[in-house]
Length: 195
Image (tube, rainbow, N blue to C red; front, side, top):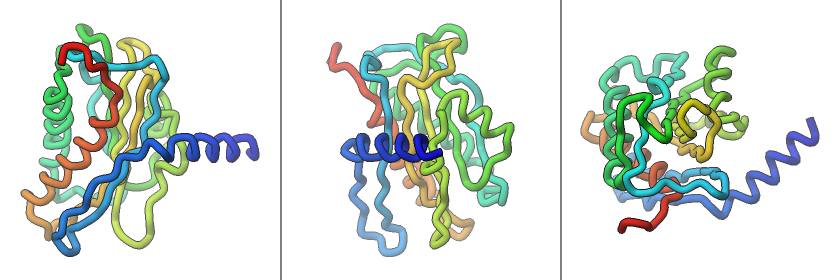
């Protein structure tokens, strides 16, 4: 157990310099800063034009049904990830035709053993990435990229998301979701070849 805590501390210290900070806008209570924690194998880079596909559907862990009133958010998240990656010149192709696979999950509470196994296949979950604050409702958006047919993360990242209640306008929810996805995708190491 002590070894595990030391390892977590070393990893946390070593990646703390790799945090991407968003500048909060001045919109009162809607203003929140977000940061991304990302870890990458040293040799991994995505090249412009690299074909990617989904490993599986986005995994939603929402035991308290915080987003039950926002069913469209699932499709919106998938669309935002595809768009953000396409903006950086990665191509989404059919499953089985890609060089790399993308897996994403939204964690809004404690997950079951089955969900934990699915996450650990790609993310090797660090407990610090899944704890939630008691002061305000928030969750974590996780994303990973691995080689096709080898679900081990070459890159993985997490961003804390401030979950919007049903009283917040959909347009604000979409803007915030886009911000989180862009922060996360921006942390994927990429080659400058072809620019």
